[in-house]
Image 1 (tube, rainbow, N blue to C red):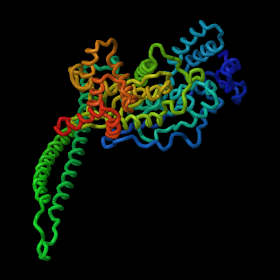
Image 2 (image 1 turned 60 degrees about the vertical axis):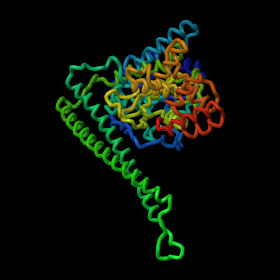
Image 3 (image 1 turned 60 degrees about the horizontal axis):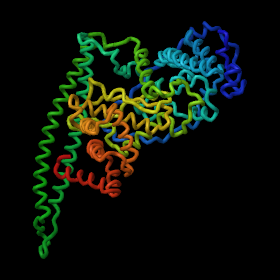
Image 4 (image 1 turned 180 degrees about the vertical axis):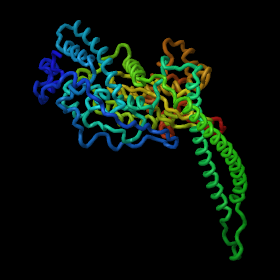
Length: 548
């Protein structure tokens, strides 16, 4: 190499352009032989664990630790740039060469050309880093994948200190992944590849057919467990109600003048006899349904066991692409483009020129959990899916991508082979102009796609999507109906939830019905305006007629 890319000290010209002082990074020992660096082996690591779906969880855990008390030292390593580029072959040299030309050129046209060349070369380079993620990679490569930091001096000291304090591990055990963690999960088989047209499998492949049947059976088994727990809780509550009513019957007082004779049943006690009969009837019904669900559970358990044995006989499972990370990387690249949009900033590195986020605006894991908690406080069914008339709260997989995008997206509403309990997949850019809007747009996309899949062929006629589409058509609006919905959802959550009437009256009614606010928000709004008071009264009327 002509340039000392593996020196701890940056090229003086690059340092000057970035506003850094040459020598502020301690010099490293003489660079090792080029070939010895690229023959370096990555130490293997244990597979990661994916957080299981807990249908009993009703909320996100409280974020008690937003930052590390002791910052990690990875960003202070004088050899950071060397380690980040090492062991990646000729593409690392190409990335470095183009980056130098991009930073050194004074001509705006040449700079634009080099910028585009660098973007293309960097993604090719990043693939090599991603393929090593299932193993144990050094901190510079991890932070490159996680935060887009190629060289620490591309950002100022204050920003470096901020990123050094971000919590490294998933201590809250939520399905929220940085890119290095996501590639590790996919590469070790913990999480399957994201669905794309390119990886769909042939129907005549018996191994694939068995795997799909197994995934469907696992979904039924998980759903059966959920129904069993719900029905058991219902029976326990009915038994408690029965005990309370029976205890009322035993309450007597001595008759006046007859200390050894108890009083007759009061009118309220006599009414309890009728209530007891109703509770007993409901208990028998609940027990009968519990017995049915138990049989369904045992059948699903048998099916899963049988299909697992058959899958093992076929070779232990299906590998659509032996290079799972390669396939997922291309998917992630498309995800990144979608979060940015055509007119957005596609520069792939964290740079002080483009990074203008405050601490609460960066999409790191703890901030995302805080945002989700706030969303559920307003829209309690944001992450719920209906299965056999029961709402299950299922938090989707969240992939955090270090881009300057402004909109989050939903890649999959759920696994098509396990509609009961599988997680959907949403993608959130880490450096948006407004993190709240980026997260809300992802949740809105998830809500739309879940409702659309639920309505199936009738998505333009029934449910949330049907009602919204009918209004969209009636208003003769042009463009993508989903994009309109996403913007209206953001308005619903940020304005209407505060009593600021911005939506069309008809859409307000649709959202109130199909995406209801929490009870606390409804109670607050009903006193703000006659508009919300009327909607609130409709809820009361529906509940009284058992039609809600």
